Length: 212
Image (cartoon, rainbow, N blue to C red; front, side):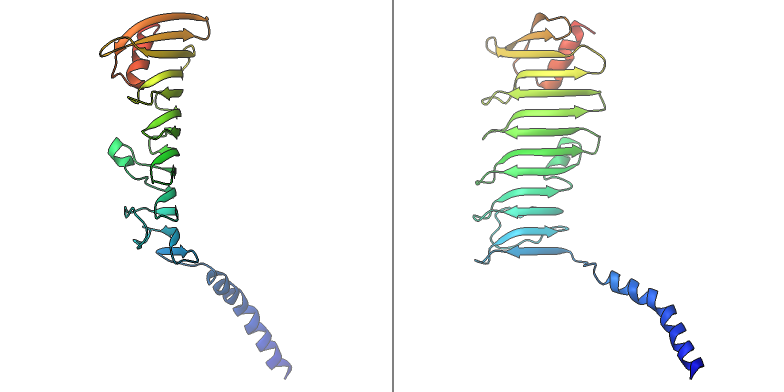
């Protein structure tokens, strides 16, 4: 009897770790997608790889991540990788997008595959305020854009070890804009003229030529 009890105890001791491991593994849920509905049966939270194409959501683009859907079916919050449309700009990116009630993008926090990270606050047409860090330059910058033609009107940049600069841009005639450059290290300003269509990168390149 004593020997029998000893054998039973030994078998229990040997099998207990495996049983415990199996029990812990049973707590992990493996799924392709989850749809959370409200009391009216409308999809409100979608999680998936990609998220399920459900009736009641206006945008049916494939998203690998999490979407919070508004009562009217628009995507209000998107957390995913890659972000919708990011590949069209040459770099895939992941992050968070915030939309208004009509589904228009109003802001985001994005990290691209090349290391650049950007925070945006958008108007009803396009990006209004942007903050970014680009380690490939290296450069950190803040831009405030015009609401009409979505061009920088105020740009502050710190590029490498060069002096920090503040650039103020105003239309100077058909197809041109006036740029006032303030160097924070010397509290002096300069003036140059650039094409009206010049974007952030072209402006910074032109300013660097003034004081390489």
